[in-house]
Image (cartoon, rainbow, N blue to C red; front, side, top):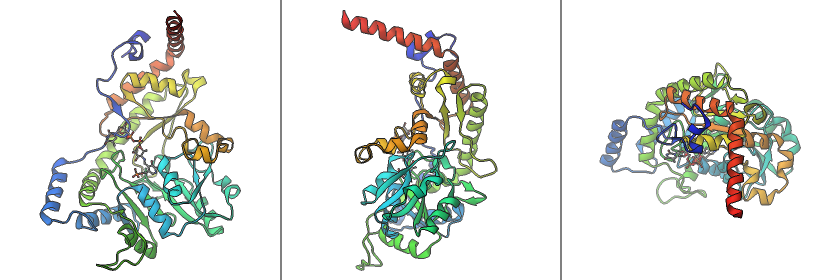
Length: 409
Ligand code: T4K
């Protein structure tokens, strides 16, 4: 606990936590189950290519998501790219700019231009009221992102797409096990794509899955995931190698075994953060819609500088010195990373809400690496930083003034 700003690690005090607390520290699950599965794989001598571990993982994902088809892939980015081909996308796709680089890169890499849509004020999701103004005769699809595991406005996106004969993909990278209006995510749009990257609630080291209720689409995706092979020596379509190998599927299953435990742990942390942050003015904590199943994978807040006293970036610096490695996801927004900032230099003018969110969002560590007591200590640090914001800033400005003096001496 800090008593004065002299105790802050950024001013030479000792760090609150001896080891760094990361956003995205993997949930490991049972090592013995993982090793047992890996031994089975080795005993079977079947390491990849639609193996039994992969098939079982797909079946369990179908059960969890309620999707009639599930195609495991080597990562979500390749999952999105397979969909470009399997859905015959061309021209442009409307996507939110407030998302991870992969959501945009996956399409541009395939020659499909992402057209950035702003987020709706007060949400982290595509503003469906802007879709019509972004549609051109080159638009072939819309990508909604279920940011932080919260579904975007699937109904409005789907209705808009249907009215204009566009395809709909949902990037569900964050949303494994989450629900929307009582329906599991995995059942919306033409297809949804999950990520099982190491940092995700369910991880397969690297991995992803596409779910769809369209059997023909599923069949095309299966072919394309494996170079277009239908049986030996028979390539019937273009394809790539996007298969999930057996060890990744083993890790994915081990992670699924512990899914309820991970979610319960995340939820306990989320409660501790909600209680600890509630008394601090200037922190607006993202809360999933009540009554829906959620994985609580991310603790997300918006820092309102005038009320909090420090900017989000100043707070990140204070926390980071204390070994709390909070992240600025998805700073600076896709439209401000290359190649998009060169391609669309003025995109920010029409994305004011995205820019606001990118400047103020703060994602805190959670997951099984962290317990509720540590979560409370993080809240105390944030409370301290807010209460001493003026002193912290004045100390920084004194330090930079004396550094300037030393340089000019
Ligand atoms: N769509 C959306 C909306 C996404 O958020 C993502 C991925 C995708 C699509 C694409 O999914 P994949 O193709 O990856 O399946 C991380 C993840 O790498 C990325 O998968 C994820 N989103 C994104 C939100 O977070 P970075 O750039 O923050 O990664 P990195 O390496 O900085 O790791 C984050 C933190 O996790 C680090 O502070 C340390 C910790 N960490 C990481 C790894 C890999 C560990 O403690 N152990 C580990 O093994 O993107």
